[in-house]
Each structure stands twice: as structure tokens, then as C-alpha cells.
Length: 189
Length: 189
DNA sequence: TCGTTTAGTAAACACCCGTTCAATGACGGA
DNA sequence: TCCGTCATTGAACGGGTGTTTACTAAACGA
Image (cartoon, rainbow over all chains, first blue to last red; front, side, top):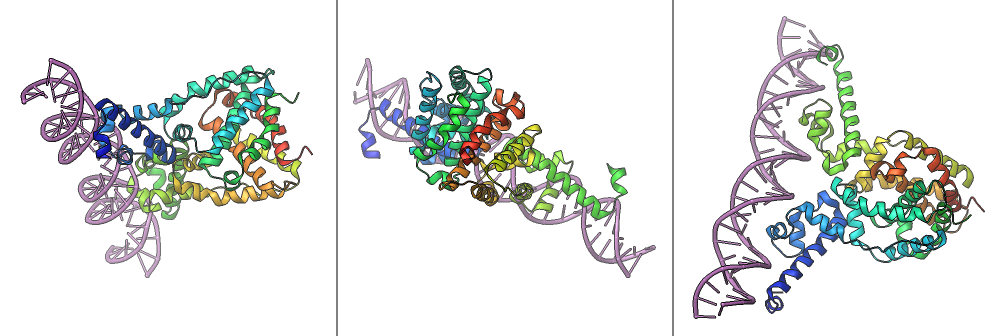
């Protein structure tokens, strides 16, 4: 590490160190939640001094927000049928590998008040898009129930590690969920 | 407190104090999770010295386990249709008021490693009963998905506090979920 | 009545946390 | 070459935690 690093420019070195810290922070927040993830542990995992993490990110809170903000997830549009298939695709994708950023946010939302607020805006926008695709008077409630259902499944697989849910192939779970989501979106008429 | 308490027998006094501690502990674990609930806070809420909590329960871990163990929830039996209605009834009931013990376990499961293990046996038994009522080859997976869905809804309402989900009447949510659960149990043929 | 038991307290312990700050030493421009 | 900048370190600080221990005082049994 010292030899390879010594050849790099100062700015490049810093960028990589910061990225390494963020990466390890996401992994640890996902694995242990906000409270049980210590700055010292993040620093150790990144092979760096705890003070450096403070120097770069200001506080543990800001470090978490930097991790939580890295949430792409494009827009959700179309009719009920397309939206359902899009959601099932994304769910299957997030089941193929462990989505560290989402898990970090999800796990920490349940521990840390600030985390819930940080995720709330993005989640609300997602639900609003979803609600627009639902042709029903109670579209808002339906969108919220759908969100809750999807969160429950991701949570059951990655966090609670319910046996059969963790071992089942993503396609099987998606197939089981399809009628559910179709009835909730009103895609089944 | 001193006057009324002085009239009681020693054993009775102790029983009530212990119960008061357990009650406040459940409330705080549900509200703040395992890590953020301090023994000092529990003791203060129960109007008692922190050392006494230790003296009665041995450790914070054991205090939590005592809270987590108080989980009744009778057996689940019958055909798919009956089971679905039973689950919806229980869900609606747990939505009417805040179910402190369940929430304490649920929230702490996601924070505290030991909590998940403590709840795992009860949850597995529940899923096994559920699977028996499902007439399908993949009954195990279906039961797990159903558990995840129900957890997601309770979580979305009480912990994440998704707006529409929190404001909607329990019956409405139950009605939306009915087709979901019926398709997952195979009750819809 | 008197010694024992025991519910309950007060104060400290050791530990780990997030955070701070002065020091260091390699890099890069002049 | 020299000097300032900046990534990085090491060691400390104050505070909050779970836990322990010595103690008080009230209920109990004989």
C-alpha cells in the first residue's frame, strides 16, 4: 500500500482514501446499524486514523448522510402494469447482490432518527410517483402499503435473514409477489 | 409513593417494582431500540435507582430478553381462508393501539444481534404453522414472504411512520392486503 | 424485642464513545 | 533548493455507558 500509494498525486491519494472510508462506512452501517458502527471501526477498516474520518466528514452524522445520499434509483412511470414489472425487476436486482447503501439506510432508519429524515424525502418522492400510476381514489394508501411490502421483503431477506426467503431465487419471490402488487396497484382490474 | 408503598408486604412491593421496570423497559425499547435505551433511563422512568435494575435483572441483555419473552400470540390453524382472516384480524388489532412488546422486539431485532436470535424461534414456529395451512409445494417460501409482508406493514406504520399508512384506518389496510395474502396462501385457487 | 433478611440507594469504577488539536512528514509550486 | 501546503497521525479530553460495591432502612421471623 505504501509503495503503490507513494506514486500517486496528493489529490488522487486523498480521493481514494475518502472513497475507501465511505465504502467501509456503508458496509458497517449496513451490517451493524448507526449506533453500533463506531468511527474507530470505520477508520480501522479503511486502514486510517479515526481523526482523519472526523477531518474529512466533520462528524459521524455527516459521514452517515454522505453514505445515505448515494441513492440513484431512476424515475418510476407508466401504467400500473409497467410499474409493477419495473418494481419487480428492481427488487430482483437488489436481491441478487447485497445492496449495501440501501441496507445501511434501511437498518439505520430504524435506529437513528436523523437517518429516517434523510431517507424520507427520497422515499416520499418514490411513493408519489407510484401513487400517480395507481388509478384509484386511495392511491396514496396503496402506494404506502406497496412500499411497506417491498421494504418488508428486502428486510426479511437481507436483515432478518428468514431462511427460506434468503435461499429462494429472486425470480421465485418476484413471481409470488406479482399478483400481490398487481392487486395493490389495481393492475388486475 | 412512600405512604402507599409502606403498607404493602415486602414481596408484593418487589413484584410491583419489578413489573414497573419491565413495563417502562418495554416502552423504551420500542420507542428507541436496544442501543439507545439506557438502563439509567429505564430506572428513571420506573422511579428507581439504576443499580436496582441491575440487581433484579442481572444485565441489560437479560432485561431485554425478559421483555422480549412476553409474547403470547396463540396458534394459527385452519385452511388458507381462515388463516388469512385470522392474520388480518391480528394485524388490525395490532394497528389499533401501539403494540409495545412487539415493537420492542421488532425494532431491537434490527439493532441488536441477540434480539434477532431471541425472536427467531417464535417466528420460525409461526411460519411453520402458516406453511402447514398453505397447499403448495413452495409453502415454506410463501410463508416467509407473508411474514415479511406483515412485518413490513407494521414497521411502515409504527416505526417508519409512513404518512398515509399511519393515518389510514386498520380496516382499509386489511382490505387492501386481503387479496395479497389470499394469493400468497393460495386461497384464491 | 432483637437479629436477620432484603428492597432500595449512593457513589464510584472501568470502559468506550465522538471529538479535538498539536505535531509530522511527504508533496508540489516557486 | 526551499518553503508552505496538506494528508495523515498520535494522544488526549469530556462525557455517557453498563456494572459493581458498600451502605441504609424497613419488613420479617422468632
